[in-house]
Length: 172
Image (cartoon, rainbow, N blue to C red; front, side):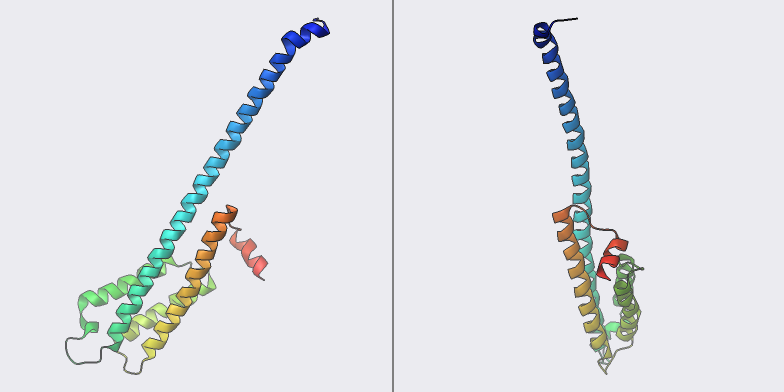
């Protein structure tokens, strides 16, 4: 057994080396875990921003297209009778539906408006009912996009959003 003086000359440095090595391994593990979490959060946030922008573009295009179709009451070559235009309107309706959450009550309200707007656009609407529905769609979409943008900011600040169940419970 080494004496006290010998221990400090031979044993203590090894303990310090092992402790430093252990802390280094721990820091490496924590750093890699943090990087993985940061990459995940960045990916989710970036995808959410892309989703928001694409939904905004699709809804704006649908509103513009449907508004033009519904407002065309002339007997000339009707926009509503143009096959490509009808197909684009239908495609936008389906794409927007696929981008929305079927379980969210606000998203469901937008989903219910889409077939109504499509029908009004295809039948030409001299009574301006389509305009009212298009305004309603725009208003609902603005609220949805604002709420999603707020989620992006919260996610970027805090690193992770609450689960849907937690968020609904807090809102009640």
